Image (tube, rainbow over all chains, first blue to last red; front, side, top):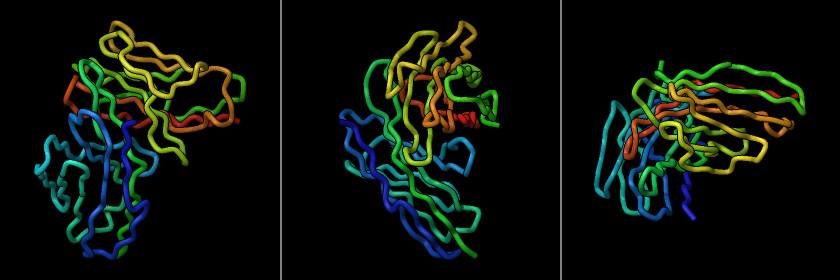
Length: 112
Length: 112
């Protein structure tokens, strides 16, 4: 069964303290791995898509990497405005079947 | 504004009632997805439509149904509501295979 596991469930950082969030997955026929950011009471906001092992993408203080079994979201020198829940999702299937399977998320709190 | 419009934003209704949630996808996107997010369960896939046709079903209850109309907007119908149906319901759209989702801001349903 396709599965996505994120760790840790929650992470508290001081402003400027870099860290990484983990997303491990078990899926047949991975077609893409997605990272989203979600603020309380709002819809998830797209951050990155990764398609193959070894791929990396960056946006401001965030960098996403992908291996064959997991992905990392690295946060460098975070600021309080980076506080949010970060969701990982995998896309699997074929044909017109395009379901995204989400992990439970990592709740990040960055304190000044 | 993500381009995906969901109405209403909030809905309070009594147990046993029936409600309809509406979603207008981003211009040009043919696929619509419905997700349920409750506090203890994360984002759970309900159903996908592509250009008016049902493409995939997730853990959608028999009391729930959906459809996508010729103008591509979609409606999620929830009937015989129970307290446990209280959740955020998100609609997302995508341009097709190998594309990520764009989420709407959600409908918060409270069943009392």
